[in-house]
Length: 409
Ligand code: ZN
Ligand code: ZN
Image (cartoon, rainbow, N blue to C red; front, side, top):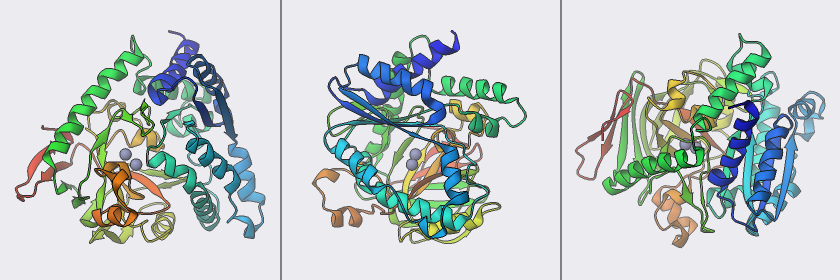
């Protein structure tokens, strides 16, 4: 299969599996400039599937860099509110949302962390109205990736740029099941496996998960009435979509006040251009009370101070150590990929959809159930082949879920 065919298949998977696009729907797409070839193919497949209108917003890493290098110091609290209000309006009117990821993970590594954090904060705040439609699953949405040269060179620093890009594409195509005979059918089978795990965990109704391993002894209490999710999901508009291409996780909402113990990251976290490595934190009653990192500690600490919920958890996810992305042995410096290589937790905003009957609950009831609130949602990896995980039911007698990083259920 030649490259053009694979790229076309990725576009088809993005539209049919990722979005599950319904004829007559609008699509709002965001993409880095480098992803133009994929964005055009997706646009073509979307119209073929009956899209009424595809509108794409391109981002440019170099323009972002220019802002940090030349922008007036007082200007970093500015965000395009008008753009996100427009997006929120489009989603409110039923548009599907597709994001192509592929930005340079280290773009802002050399920039002033204070400016970066102010700009991120302003952007997150402005993005809230649009993001709410996504996190509450009002609409079908998905993210796929594009192997941009800057990202590829970070993943494969010793290869030439051209080789690095091809290697990254091979990894993206494999993880997205593009190289299988019938990618759409392969996704259906994969979704069925993830659904089986989700159903098992939902039947067990654990009160907490316990993670143990080197540097880690962590109890993650689960939200009252939590629901596990994973694989394809039915959005509230009735459309079945796969929010992440690829995906290997089952995940749920922890209780914002019931996380205790210490935990160490098992992979570097690439956050808005800064690499945060060897994180170790201690939780008390749900809140991080002590945080260290070998690199990027200052950025991590700023992240934790974003708001009251930034030092609490909004997600816990289980991924076997033998997942194809983990087996590739590649560190992608990209959450969409790295989070699917290992069990992870996320700082910040919880997914309401991971709480049963959330549609009928008030905000106060959701908070009482344990849902965390924050402007941020940042996944970082805590799983490896050395981690054991137990489920703790109401009876208190722990049951093994994973041993040495693999499912035992
Ligand atoms: Zn996750
Ligand atoms: Zn997450």
